[in-house]
Image 1 (cartoon, rainbow, N blue to C red):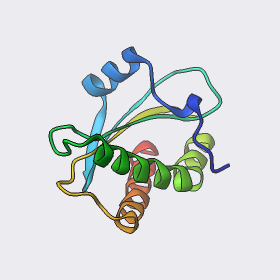
Image 2 (cartoon, helix red, strand yellow):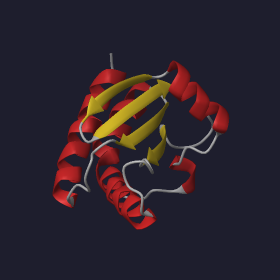
Image 3 (cartoon, helix red, strand yellow):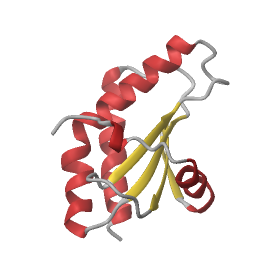
Image 4 (cartoon, rainbow, N blue to C red):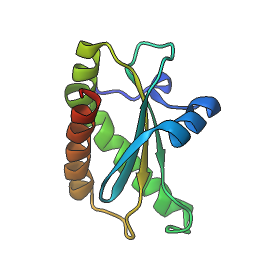
Length: 127
């Protein structure tokens, strides 16, 4: 239940390009979210990619820390706040979560904002 497997990661270049060219987006500081309804094979309703810009965080260890915290909070809350509504509606989406904050957020802040982000996303996709 609280896993984050390879099938849930967005790796397809065509889907990523389509997501950034045709997708919808919104801001939930310190995250920028882009999403798009898509058809892809797999058991999961969402494929996601996380990004942290090299321009803001020059050290790879800092980028990795931010990505690790973001992935962890996503992993813990995706099932009840995102997967359940999408499965009920029979929809699949591709998702990009970009970190746009200027400093490394604490785990508590990342967790609070991820919850807000997932609730907003589930409201957007159910329209």
